[in-house]
Image (tube, rainbow, N blue to C red; front, side, top):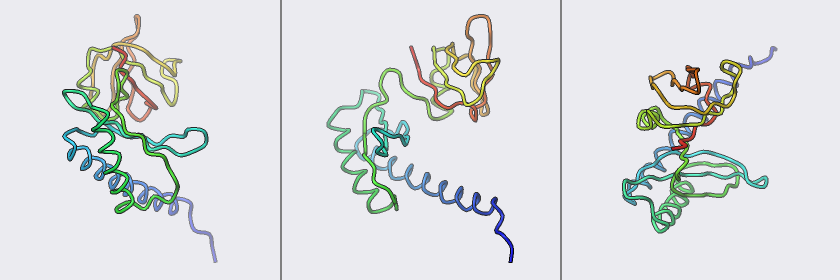
Length: 165
């Protein structure tokens, strides 16, 4: 009798996580569209030790408090019915705000030429936090100009990126 290889457990975990992400994205997108907004993105976080699901909505005319409240109620009901979240969480629904976090390649493309801040998982040219003008966006990476340097940063190395102006 032998041991089950670690990669089997990782693969099973990864498949379950991907399935949950797809289900969650589908539920959040449907709820946002029903309110006339679009899903900007979402993230899991912690606040005072409690798990928090932060959902960001966007609309060309701005997102009202009422729209956030409606989506919050819809999402709560849909998550209970369609997602098997095995832990307690707090749901927060808001607009992405002025210093919006970037989640998708298309969002980076929209903000080409703008000043953004990137927090990196590992250093690029000895820097883990880079603030600069977004010069170029491809499917694999972004290029930021900061001072006299140009940084090529793969998306896989970006922990968080926010628009500054």
